[in-house]
Amino acid sequence: MREPAFLVEPRRRQLLDFLMNACVWLGVAPIVKYTALSFFADRFLPCLPRISRENSAQNWLLHPLTESKLQIFILISLWISSKLHDTYPMSSKMLKSFGDRHIKDQHFTMRDFVEAEIIFMEVLNYEIGASNVTFLFLEELLIQFRQFYAWTYFPCSFGYVEIGELVSFHACMDIMDLLYETEEAASLYGHSRPLAASILVTSYILTVPKQRWEFPVLPWVKFAASHEEEHVEQLVRKVLEHILVPTTTSTMSPGYVEPSCQVTKD
Image (tube, rainbow, N blue to C red; front, side, top):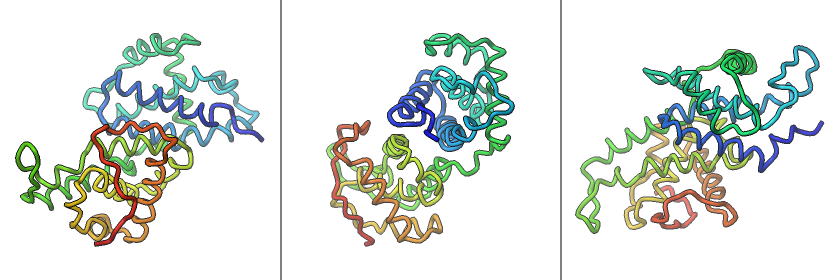
């Protein structure tokens, strides 16, 4: 059976663009954004082919499945994520107001939002833990890296900067966003901990000046993340191959210097 149209590129990418733009418009924290992406892109969307084949217990929000209905599920993923992480979660009125402005083809009531949340939870089997989100592991590794590399300075045009600070947190998030461009690249999120280590290494390659690459970053992440160096290196290569292909439209800062794709161990 063919996959639903909205799971096929580039329609899937359009949905994830809507989610990422919603994060900007709503001003959500990074952990809320990446938990919502995990819920929607990594877990909800892959379940849709199975749901589309089921004939029992059909719900109007799932049958037929339209772009506007998927957009309300995107907002639900952000709502649930906000409830998990925010001291003051987004209100249902806030989400409905956003949906009224940005979901063009269909109007949803407050009752529809509540119903959509129940359906979303059922599809995820009520498993909404966020302890395995890649962003959490990446944030922890980056903190450790900066603590380990504190007091090591590199001269620049405006003085001296700590080497640890050269590994850009925003570059790490840009890399995470780019990995959601295709379903194949997004499948790497099934390896949360080693992927977090590989994103940090990739950011190191992209943002630290090449003359400062003497730090043994791969052995360090093996020690810090407790993962085999070869596995992390393989993931780094896959990440670099994806974000540096000429056909990809990059959201990276124009200040980044394109690195050599060679990953060294020392």
